[in-house]
Image 1 (cartoon, rainbow, N blue to C red):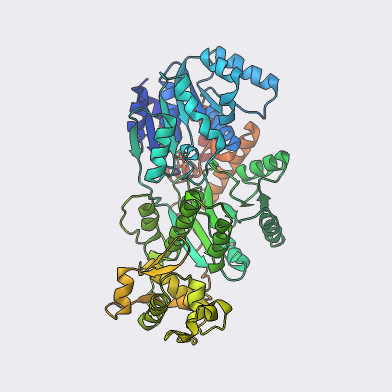
Image 2 (cartoon, rainbow, N blue to C red; image 1 turned 60 degrees about the horizontal axis):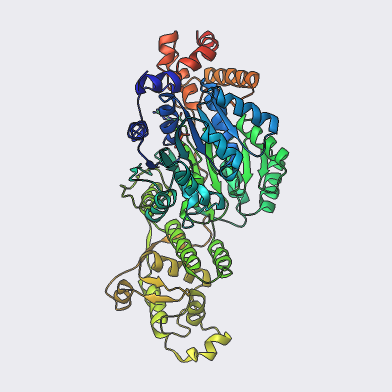
Length: 592
Ligand code: ADP
């Protein structure tokens, strides 16, 4: 069987997506690979497909049990021998898997990174014909990344112990520095590097200033997304619990998920979510680092995420099936301040500096007025056109600009007169003529700028500082002191104007109700509902999540194309021969 036949027969896809074929070819040629492809880009196929064309076992290192579990389930569902070894299994279960490995029944073996240091495991691998190693979520090796994992640091052992076995590393996001870290740490040898576009065109990216705790804004959003699956991220375990309770009180099918739950409870929530019985999971970021549910229709952040990497990766869990999905971030100025305070506590050193810079870039990105897709891509080093209609800045461009040149000049003058080393809080006090001790100690009440900004609220001055940072008129030094840039100096001298969208100067900005996403017109809602019920029935009989049977995308195509026989059925997205044999007849009966 060749590549294309395998793609159709097992995976039910007609053509490769961008970069998939290159990745498959590299692996088949036994070349090392480093692939950076956004969530939903189709990374798993890149190592699963070549495995089917090889004789041995492919070992996949993955950091999350839930992810491995879902992958193994999905593979078995399309008739591919797969198993996982984890510390959660009983010795009997593990023995059974080892026996199956020796019998050659397992093509893909998923393991958690900590297994690699076990002698027993090393001996087991020594006895098996190995195809290649896969490192999933490879950014976890890098301390510069956002999800550094101690266990991943031991992965250099792979190359040392099995120098002849190729390595394929995959991640959804990596800056150039993280990419170098991955290649260096894993000891990759002239790997083929493939970097896919970060643009997720099926995601609409929105941000809103949070009003109060944001709960009413959240309810507004959820009111138009009943019956859909989604994740709401909060910062603490306590918040997940209380917000989930609040949503349940308001009649939503919601539950909390965080690292502090018992494993029994975690499993229960996870399964309810996968099987669509539970609609909204309120989680800390511990949830679903690589969660494999393809029909997540929305991802909401109740406050600022930790870094741009986190933001991108967390929002990226929406819409893996390629269908329209929403992402929404609520934030307030205090979010960044709190995170800054948290970083203040870290030990002095390059890591701390790095953390400040990352936070700064995140804040600038979120509060900027550029296309958000474009800014996100730019952060990771990719150039994109503005999306035009997929992010809040393009969808709701400010028609109403306000000139704040005079205010900006006052602020820049305060920066300059006080010696370009004070932070925003101090400068605002100075402008507002505060009797704060620090100001008097510095003798700054004698400066010409003292008190010239008393007419504006502190918060409004905060917005002006943000705007000047965004424009690059101000720079932040390591101690959060503000200094003028060349551009700032020009504004101060009256050579440049400064504008801002008017609504940003009104601190309380409301959240307009987003439109509900209706089914496309050519889909008969009744037929779609019946297809979905059939899927759920079959899923329950087989004890797997519904989307493992068919994705939402497949269901929609079935509803539109209404295939009448085997041939027409096989032309539908996601239906290969194996799936057809298992479920094809049942769906054909319904469609006929
Ligand atoms: P990633 O691991 O990169 O986040 P996945 O491997 O989970 O992405 O794939 C995301 C979705 O894309 C899955 O639903 C998968 O079935 C689909 N997919 C992958 N490759 C193709 C392809 N060549 N054609 C159509 N759909 C594909």
